[in-house]
Length: 540
Image 1 (cartoon, helix red, strand yellow):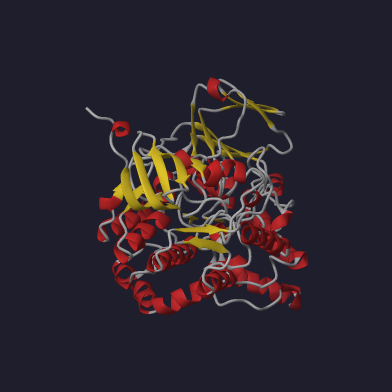
Image 2: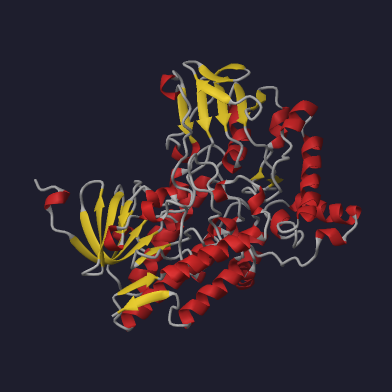
């Protein structure tokens, strides 16, 4: 019987890696609108991307359902009905499976196929990939749709192999679920994932101990079912909703705020905050005042309001004090939204441990030891996030022109032009890559803009019989400088966040997403395309 390595190399027009929101739309555009012979390779045994892998308790979207979806198909928008304002992971995965079936995408999706390497041939202007199974495939175009939050960050803590209980990372959750009943659970991490998981685990476990290094701001989600009347209203105004979302700084359909927090009295300002806090969600950040991410005094007004809410919610003053964020501005770290997170600390079976004050020293056979003592645990849950933006791409052996590896290219931090291409890697595109709005935005809006730009670019190349496109080093360097200049005009630099890679030991600190907002970014991308793809070298 022949093996993949014995079989001849499969020749395609385009290869897409990853079957999430990005990859499936990219496949549809290339195959159905450009007529390219395309295959999508996915490491998992199902579609869904981040919503396939992230099945931890409490996993749900933090953008509202009716605009955390595709906008490219009016029929899809009208036929799908979301159950609630913020759907849980199973519902989003069901939606993405519906998309795969509705547009017959599965016929060109190859599951259980992890891409190990990708190498560019300068003579033929083609990419050659090898899968983990040894299958060899080549194509003119290579498109990465691997996602920004795909490579789990399991901290290197001594003794993990000695632990006699069970441990899990939220980004690698067992598909069959985990039963916490009667268990003593330790949860490490209080970012967005930990904040979502905490109330659900606490309701089931015998005892939950949360090990917190950094206290975090969070705003209530105010999740609620979408009534039939609300569904009808949404579907009747989708044109306006998407117009507003694509014009919004973060891809949200909020009316842009042009008011300064400092131009109001404290009572007036707090009344505005209260109204938006009662409404819930990201609107608190993106729809309250225009200056809370650029002016530290303005940000202090939002942060103080949220700290007061924490004090008023958590009954034990000592625990409340531990939960007050004091080392970063609100929004400078990923701003979580939650369902009863702070209320959970009023439960008798929940304990909070400050591991900034008393760091974790080791994991023992029976639990975990900090500088202050031992904690007996049956289960450890790592809600410690991801090697964001770059981790998954760098896990593939990618070699461009002259044998240059992406690992070497990005040794001092990721460098891209527009977040779309890397100099030295012709015909390779990255969807929502470093240098684009990506994780600072409502992702489907950014994803669709990238997919459409890439497919339009490839269509233009084929019409002009051009064989390769490559970002110039000058354009790349200028864009990296611009991305960092924009970031330094904001408060994002005031926090050690995964936006800068601060959660990964040894990772170069560089601000990775584009903080200038979707409208400014879209305008720049459109200008580049209309000016014959300035900043790129195209060859016939």
